[in-house]
Length: 110
Length: 126
Image (cartoon, one colour):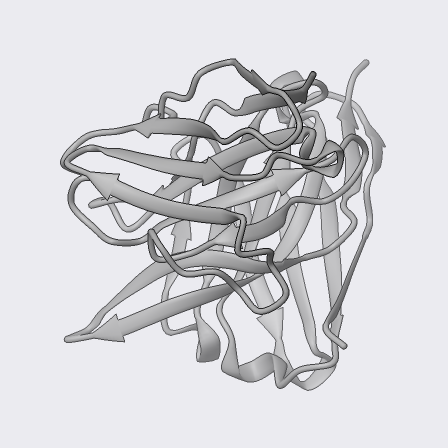
C-alpha cells in the first residue's frame, strides 16, 4: 500500500487561509469517507484534527475544516496562527482492510 | 481522561525480539479498537496493526506481517505488540492509539485514531 501524496510544505502569513491536499486512489481516499487528518508538533504525538472527511473532534478549532473530491481530500486552515505551525498527515481506510497515511506536510507560518 | 502509556522499547540487535506494551486508562478498554502506529526518525507516520474489541479482527501492514503479533488483555486494560525478526527498518517510535471504527455486515472499518500515547522508541542496530 503506497502512502497518500501530500505536498512537502505549505506556508502562509498569519490570518491567511491555506489548504493541504491528500491524493490517493479509488481503493482508499476515493472509495471511503474515512479520511482523517492529524497535527504533529516536533517531539509530540499526533493529534486528531478531522475525521470522516469533514468532522471535527470536540475541542478542535473551527478554523480547521476538511473536504473531499474524488480521490483527493483537503484540509483547510483559516485564520492561520503561529501555533498552527506543525506537520500534518492525512490518512484513509483502504480496501485491503488496512490504513494508510499521507507523506506529510510541513506548515510554516511566515 | 483517556491515557495511553507505552513501554518496552529499547535497543535490540537485528533478528532479535521485543515486546511492547500499552497501558490504557480513562475509558472502557474492552469496547474499543486499538492500534499501533510507528514513525521512523525524521519520517512520516506508518500504520502497523489493528485489533478489534473482543479481538474480533486483527490486521497487519504488509511490512510487518508474519513478524509482528498484536494482542490485548482486556482484564489488564493493556495492548501488546510482539516484534520478532526485527530489522533496521523497524527502528521507529511506536505509538499506541485508540481507534474509531464502524462495523457492518461482518466488516469493520478503521475510521480514525482518536487518542495517542507518547510513544516508545525501538532501535534495531548491531
